[in-house]
Length: 292
Image (cartoon, rainbow, N blue to C red; front, side):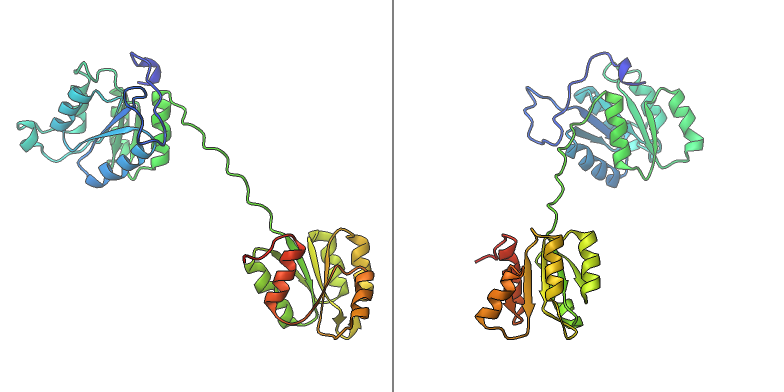
């Protein structure tokens, strides 16, 4: 049994909507016949969230009455049931007896039936398929695989979810300082603010990183292990003239010295004071101001 054997075309469900107007956009009905309340609940939730109307029956008698009243579009049927004396007038229903009677009912003669069972598939699968069921699933059931099978059986193509745009790339900051604690603290503050951080302790590491990472901003300590970083500043600006360089130093400079540094390629000058001040300068340099 497959979708091509159904007597009438099946309307498309309104996937993802629980408030569809049933008069103009009826949802397909799926009947779950299983005595396990956990199966009824979990599969019911999955199917409802996918846009189907869900009916449940815990025994054969309830299944028969529900089919006559509701005329489901597809039935999920377990094989093994406890004795159904209370509801079925003494009939010892099992999945095969239910299946046989469904095929004798005008309301279900062409309804696709999918077996869901915890029994050994080697024992029952071939018998079920020979009886004309549309598919066979062994518990525990993968809900996504079952849902995919239901769509295929009913000839449905679920609406594709719109692609999620990739998150914007984090700005890359190269932090150059020979002191371990400054590199560590700067990394903590910048990463928590959403920046990608790479550090270098000397000129050779800095030049290697600029070749590979393509920084959006460079923070440069002017004194690297007692050596002036001015030659490195000039090399960095030559390689990346559009990348702002923030000179960050514990040395004291008067305004004339600061203007000289700015004239040699530095875009910003900042004394080593607090991490917060450094972060605000970085945000300003990259056009991202901190919240007021």
